[in-house]
Image (cartoon, rainbow, N blue to C red):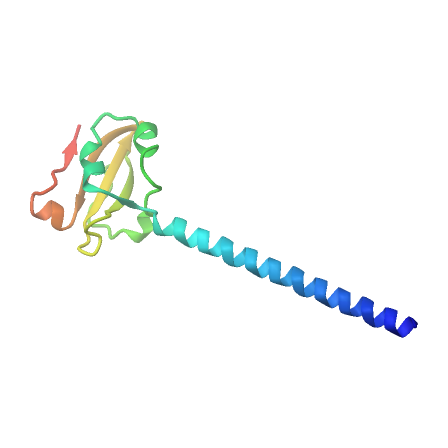
Length: 131
């Protein structure tokens, strides 16, 4: 009789461990999917968003409407940052294949410069602006 109880307990423990492992793996997979989707949206804005940003706008107000910017580590240094400015970079959500990149630079918490590089700037479709 004790053999049956022992086997039943071992069987129950194994099933419970498999269930726990399955739940942990499922939770990890779901977390990974959400993190991947969040990173996919990072650093893209529209030309309309770029054009709507006005020189003199506070950094807090502007960044509250935008997704997190790209890391400047991923941006080629085509445009050295102006001294004293903190700059943030975004790719165009429509022409990212073409490589248009927007740059917003803030001095003392205020938008001081907006410019970029790529086809939209080269063609004159988008204009840089500064204070």
